[in-house]
Length: 117
Image (cartoon, rainbow, N blue to C red):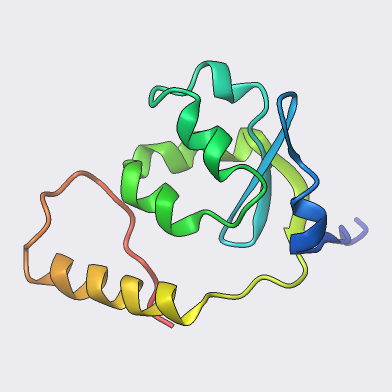
């Protein structure tokens, strides 16, 4: 069985997917086409429309239970962000979420645990 080559796009190329019928987001450096999901999104279309064409890991995790990760694969485009990185602000946010969660300061809603970097 041949190895599957990963396909990559840049963050600038991701920005081209910002229109109705062509809405992509990136979560943890993976590209997702949420064009068809926007009409069925339980939170309405505003969150997707306002975050389209961006890396949205922190927003995704903040507003979705862990069960959402189980359906995310169906939107995967097959593309990864070539220039994906976690910003210093996101690193700090993720550390705080991790520490606050350990202290029991968040209600348990089945959210995933961030991997601290």
